[in-house]
Image 1 (cartoon, rainbow, N blue to C red):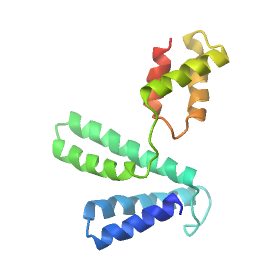
Image 2: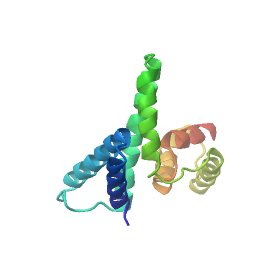
Image 3: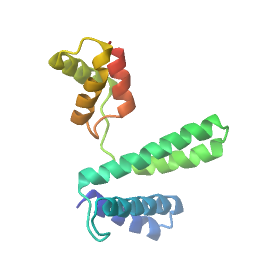
Image 4: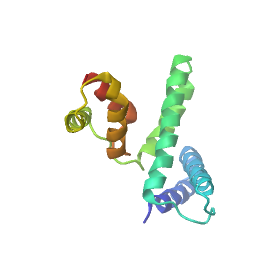
Length: 150
């Protein structure tokens, strides 16, 4: 069963359980899947591959994290809590992200492999690492590890 099918089934379960927050989040995710299909030039009846599905879920997750940050800065803890609840639901569908230590090891190995010695090559190093770790690590954490390695 693909991730998209799993989301659809979980949405049906949430509807039966009358879990309005879960239904809203999963319905929004299904709409995002359809938008992605249309963007890719496919019909809404087609299915996304799991990798494409993860990109959509990751994007939605980042939006929630940004919203949490903004609401917290604005003193709206009530809205931040709502976003946190939605983020927990989205994270159920994302693979486990790498730890900081694992990211640092890969950064150091890739830095040695490419022979990167100064900060002017940081962008090239980041590009290589992000291509390798796509979907396995948070981009912000990778950036911090790369900056720390210089």
